[in-house]
Length: 369
Image (cartoon, rainbow, N blue to C red; front, side):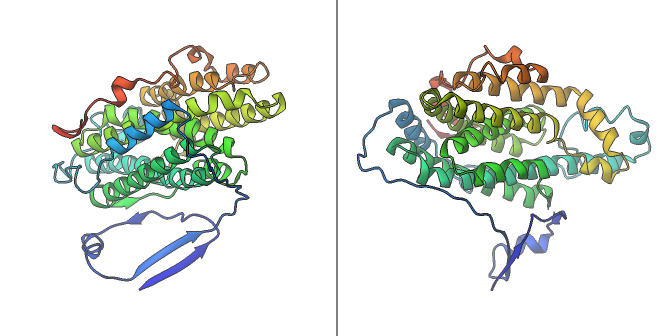
């Protein structure tokens, strides 16, 4: 039986999964659906020409069909990883030198690492649901036939990402943390804005850029081969999504009146501030006796935190410049963030076709070539 509960905001408690919960997935059982309603003045359009007007977008669409991996069939869920081991080889970087860390038992330290991993992956799950919703909106409101086709393929990609992270969190982590309020703020802004191009900017350039930075950090640090495979597969999809956004927006932004360009540049800047300063979670650290201020200070000084911010802006700033949102008016604000040194690095408008068309591999298994 389906039970539907409508709530005013997202849950704030951690959701835990037992062996009994996992067994219920294979049987008929009561399901509790929790819905939060949002409204958007979305304006859609038909396209009656059905023409292939953009060769790059169509090629990306074809790659999406070609590398359409299956969560159930193409991921080896039986890869072992000891339950008593921490998911990252280094553990929670920066905390080990703090006096409060010395007071934790070895078991508590492992649990700290496991919960940190679950908290991060939970944000991936929630972010991918947001991406799923935005991509589905783009099918209606994208102004050209090519873009509608690609948005449709991206919608299925995002559904697959929600599925794969949900399963990993249920089976490997056995818990799901609530969404970070600042990530929720970004998703709400993109989902409820009536302007289709702001949805493109918010999702394809900013949130997908954030995801790629986070995935790259996890891919380099995790000890779990299953998680490494999952993140590698998702990164390939996300690389196509960002390339689509840059190539599609490049000409459109340049054709807008300057005041509208500045509005979008300001939105991009404000989103970057949120992603740089306010997406750090202190929830797990506070569960183990650290204050919020201590956790923020440790993260800011850690090599992992610095690497994440570098990955984030190395990709995002060149893309914003390419599509015309590093305007003379907004540049000083980005300069204050200390990220303009990345502006002349490679952008995703120059698509690395060799990488995107390389065989798709999980572990030692070739999925598609």
